[in-house]
Length: 168
Image 1 (cartoon, rainbow, N blue to C red):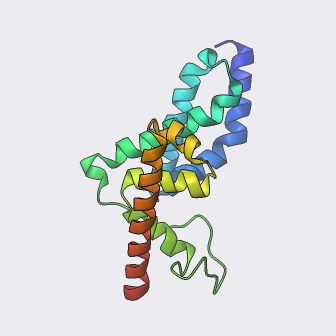
Image 2 (cartoon, rainbow, N blue to C red; image 1 turned 135 degrees about the vertical axis):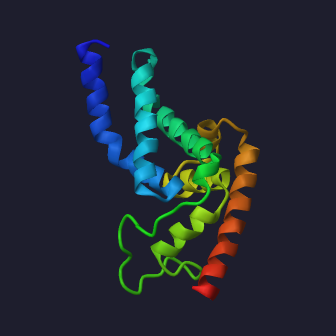
Image 3 (tube, rainbow, N blue to C red; image 1 turned 180 degrees about the horizontal axis):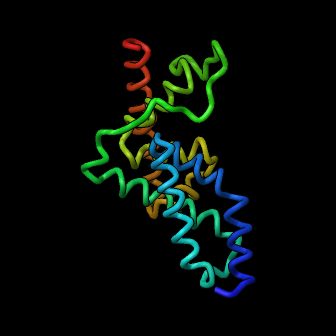
């Protein structure tokens, strides 16, 4: 890459690194793994920087790379037993996200128990704010698949949160 390309990449990285890292955390539930996933996404972007002509598509490219890396990593046998109780921000005392979610901690714990593909759909839809078409593009699947994964993911999350509330 020439100096101008390096400068453009550095500016993009500086502007987006925190948001990418937060999304990675929502996908995996661990800050150390989130750092690794974000690094994987940015390294892949850096390798292809000169070939990406549509700079407006950079966020989509990084998001797709991030989600695929998170799903691929979740399939590794040594990653199945993991997680941390660390959360990105403490929830205000007595705060309730809804009737099922007592705290941000419960929500993150519940997300970690949802299968990786469903978790990716939920994070992209409800935390990243993508529409069905955007999630389908990021995951490389059909819109119908996104809709069914969303429904299953929400059902699984509700069940997990009921358990947390009952046993927590």
